[in-house]
Image 1 (cartoon, rainbow, N blue to C red):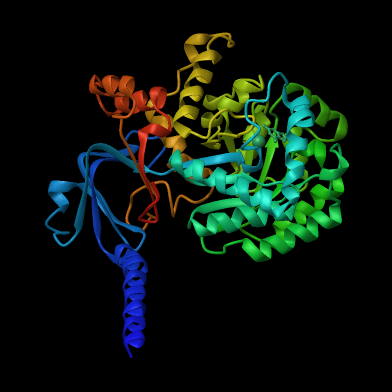
Image 2: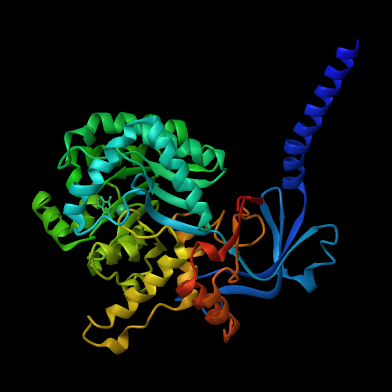
Length: 465
Ligand code: GUN
Ligand code: ZN
């Protein structure tokens, strides 16, 4: 009898703990919460329109059920949402989560590989590293590390290379799903000019990609990208089958590299002598679509820009990678001139940081360096701080055709947002105190900030940092 009572007590104790843990999570998501702070987000591209952003110094962002309810000036909105629980981030910036439009999760542990430019770097460092990702334990370990660090840096959505092994894709999507992150990835296609241990064939690449699309595409917040590594590692047969997949599954992405390095561009000319240009190789096989994202695009010509603009394809500008591999200086002004969508990419392991703040820092320096290489330097403007933040948020969302869901704070958007603060970086803190206006403050964060400036991260309204 005594034993029965104490067992009952134990069960009700366990039930209470369970309810407190999981019951409270549900309540938290359904509850209306107002986050007070300096609210800033974009509604257009500052390179194109005059009133491109909304800024509320005494702002509030109301969130419920993982979505934005409304954002604006606190004094204006507070009576309408008098029942909201308030969280006070006054004096801190509340902005949409960063978007990384090109990154390789399997290269997380091979950053800072010394000495080579693109083609040697691939052979000497990248391919041996990617070999390990047919092992599910290894793939899962690195996927966890990558996603933890991505979120730690305030990035809430990314377009991500896995490896040629479907195991690597499953590991990535499984971990993304656990964290409720909006992520896009896919199996790499490569059937030539690579070591045997990383090669697939046109047929296996088609069948494996098809099975992965059926398993993962549009499953919750996940989407699939058909991912030929780059033209040199795919035969025409493989690219034709990649195009067939894109035709069969409307809405899947295409994710690849283009015109990154001069030696690579020359090699593509040898491999595909009948193509007008490197981009034209992809276009010939139906791979330039409004869901295509091309990393780098440093050596695209005007006709290529026209084609990209017409088809609605995007470029991932990856400044830390382009400087680290000595690839070249991306011409952002030209992409803007042709209305080509651009997002920022960290491109690790060729990139040297997962931080989008540090990526904006290097992007600025790329535009500064371009002045040294054009005939008339007065025509080149350094990257505007607000344009840069646009690329990292709404611009990235547009580049991924996700701007109806993420990248801003209009009602109904998914509540992926971050809180930036300067207190953990003394020199940034001092600089922010001297900021002349919001653009100057943003510039200080871009030049001096890193993951320490990302104080909090929310994924669909649930705190992840
Ligand atoms: N081109 C083909 N593969 C790669 C890669 O892994 N990284 C970069 N930066 N460029 C590539
Ligand atoms: Zn890359």
